[in-house]
Length: 120
Image 1: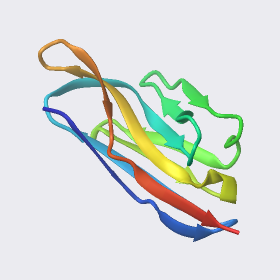
Image 2 (image 1 turned 90 degrees about the vertical axis):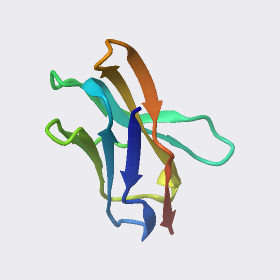
Image 3 (image 1 turned 45 degrees about the horizontal axis):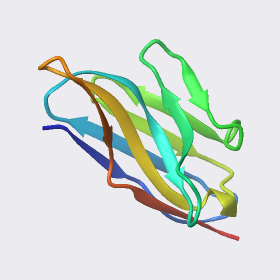
Image 4 (image 1 turned 90 degrees about the horizontal axis):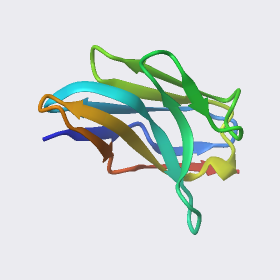
């Protein structure tokens, strides 16, 4: 069984920074891509950023220049460094990973979500 465990959310003032982490564990052969989505109240879940093993990045226009995604393949962990946070960044942030298991299947996993609240 595979698990995604997120950490790093919280309350921060506008202009502040937070770092999210998401660690995958279990019967993992490979992860590609790995990234972050967010969902604000009464809004649809949207892509924030994701990273592929080959180095390709997909980053939402709304966070370009402020958020940085990175991964440590030795730890099966993805990070989201968020700077210059704005109230509109307030949302539940979810880790997502497309995981190829040792058994050969590719399965999409989601983390439990971590709340990020930015006060004005």
